[in-house]
Image (cartoon, rainbow, N blue to C red; front, top):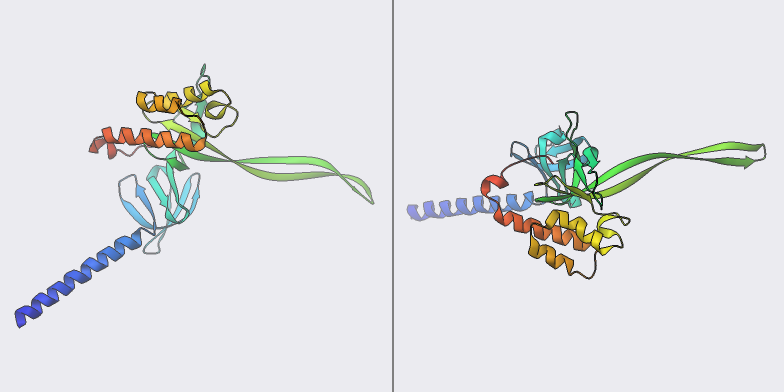
Length: 244
C-alpha cells in the first residue's frame, strides 16, 4: 500500500509540474518579448518604442530601458509588430547611376542605429520607417478690427517602406507609387526587385510572369526568397546577431 501511495504521489507531482510548465509556456505566448544582443530572452510588456529608446516592463514588474544596440528583436505581441535595430532610417544614401534609384547605408563612425518596424525578416529585411515633418502655413484672418496675419503650425507623419538585402547592402524603396516597383513601367518594376532576388533565377522568372504588381505581391516574393535562403543556412549562420 505504501508503494502505491508513493507512486501515486510521484505521478501527481509529475502531472502538476507538466501542467504548470504547459500553462507557463501558453501564458508566455501572450507576452511581449525581447531577444537581446547577448542572446538572452526577456518576457513582459513593451510600453514604448521610439527611435533610440525602448521601454519594457519585465515579469517582475521592473521597468527597463533599452537602446537599439542592446536589442536584436523586439516582439510586441499585443500589437502584432516586430522591431529591430537598423541603420536604414538615418543612414541611407543614393547609389549614383542607378535607375530605378537604389540606396546603400553610408558607413560613418557617427551613424547610430534606430528602432525600425520590421515587415519581413530574413536575408532581405523589409522595414517601415516613420518621419515626422514640421510645417507651417500662413494667411490672413478678417475680423471686425480689420485683417491680421494668421500662422498655423502642424506636424505630419510619413511612413516609408524599404527593403535591404544583407548580402549586398542594397536598399530599395517599396511603397512609392512614382518610381521603382510601383511605377507604370513594368521593366522598372522587375529591375527593382531583380536587384534583390536575381540570384534565385526560378523565383525571379516566376515573378516576371505576374500579371499584377502590388505591395502584397512584392512581400510574397521577399518572403519566398527568404525561405529559400534560410534552407541553405547553417546553424552558425542563424546564430549571428547583426545590425543592418
